[in-house]
Image 1 (cartoon, helix red, strand yellow):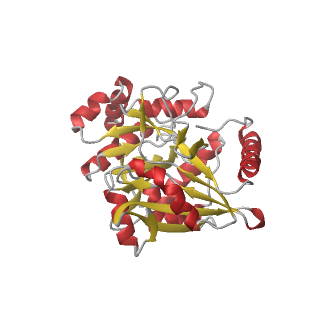
Image 2 (cartoon, helix red, strand yellow; image 1 turned 135 degrees about the horizontal axis):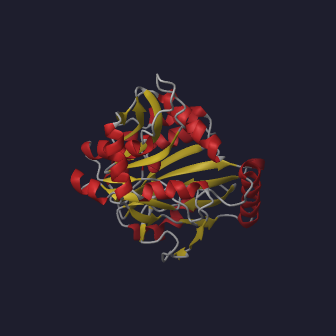
Image 3 (cartoon, rainbow, N blue to C red; image 1 turned 90 degrees about the vertical axis):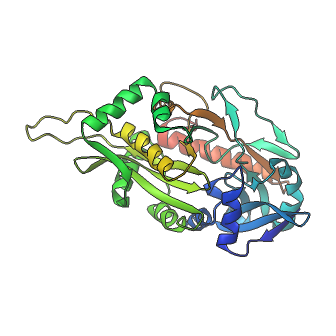
Length: 354
């Protein structure tokens, strides 16, 4: 197995887009966005016995003193996921002496009827299970169903809210107003005490993901022109993925000076985002993240219940690691301790959001 430097964006993204288990986080454009965070992006086609069998985007994340970590966000992508077992030797041929470890997040999902109960392998060959960077648990919807079937699969409350939103004049769809999305996104993060990257990261992704085989776009739900809920999506191949978003409180007053009724903007956003994806030919809609541990006092519990109401199925995407240096375990402990301190400072708890 060899890593062959990708000859061009189109050649690389075509492989990523056509493989059966894939992810937009392995596309060329996503790597361009990561460069705005100071990371390096390296793209390779994976060749085995003279045939291209996969693709991998390796991010090199800098640490102090010249050391770095290698990270493969929701990847690598393979025609046959079992080929992952043969990858370590090829990785070592690419790695520098200062690369301490590599983390992968294979995009072949593990189904689960319960986000807290699933059989997750603790190892894949010499790969050992590790902490994820992307959400490990998610809910997805099969968009190959008819629109009537999708509506029928909604929880009855969600169906009722879809009809209420329509009755009250709430509309949702793709929208070019990034600043309106950003206002919603920032307000949501502040309310939930969540972190975020600089604005440039998201605008770079919005631009760099536009290609022959991938795209990024914003969906907003509006009532009388006011954007009240929305999200940021990235898509490749047959799937689209809701990475970021949220909603804001509607503090408007009617002409009579009364607060507006609840116009069900979040429900309108999710439902119309699903329909938009279906009408554009996507077959897979990923809600991107539900809690690993369900607790009603966590902000993420309400997010989980909202996503669950849209009738999807639960999936796991575990991460695996391979140490490339004897320093890796010590550095990993230091980074985990740092993450706990940040969580405590921001939200008063050492637990992760999801």
